[in-house]
Image (cartoon, rainbow, N blue to C red; front, side, top):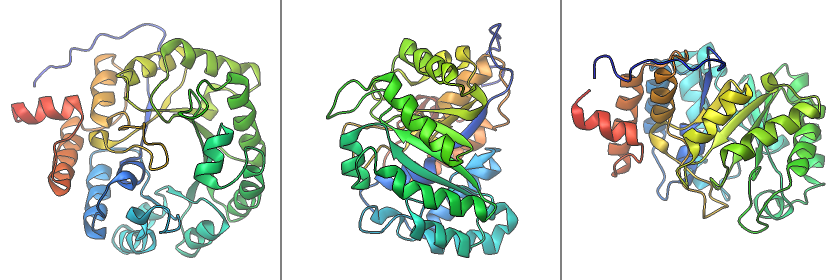
Length: 315
């Protein structure tokens, strides 16, 4: 729709935001059926073409735990053969040293590790305690840094846990600081089950600031379970955060937390940022097209409100 959304900047917000696209990994890992490798590759290429500056492609996790991503090596091999250095810069998740070794063999340059802010989720997701998870991350992060890789750290259950309930802010900060001390470059704070609210977001960012962690080291990762994702992004912008994870079409959830519904949709985030006059570099029509195409491959409509609205108008 020409001229929409109308751009009305809000004073005091960042002028530019980085959208960290997680649809091909975090989105597709929760699918009941396995998506063909060639479809995943086409999805990644469509998202890159839409101008998304970062597209997380897959995870080198054991197929027993996430069978939907068992083709990680084949996917990255094919993308590298076609896209060359561009594919090597696509981030991938590596849960442990074995996963990292596979990424190194393929010449990949950006990896991520996945931690828990709570005891129960660490046990269910990593088969570790809250404390012993760092014994797994330490050699993996060290080896990645030695190989010249950039390392991102995800922390899940930062705003609430389905088994433990409320998660103390100081506990999240402690886990996050431990990852940063290991050498992680950026920390993505995850609202895994979508229970965050705006005040909670600001309080967590402020607590990290008090612990000496600036906004430039943090990213926010919201789920829209209770319809609060964009409200929480607004709170994050007010707090100075400039990197936000999002998933094209709102795909995804968490295979280990059944109450976790879809991620914040990339299109919804782009529409929101555009209306605020915040630069993001993403072609909205192109990413909507990619999501509509993927929804057709999956055999169901996209949960993204913006995708539904624009697709229905033929934009």
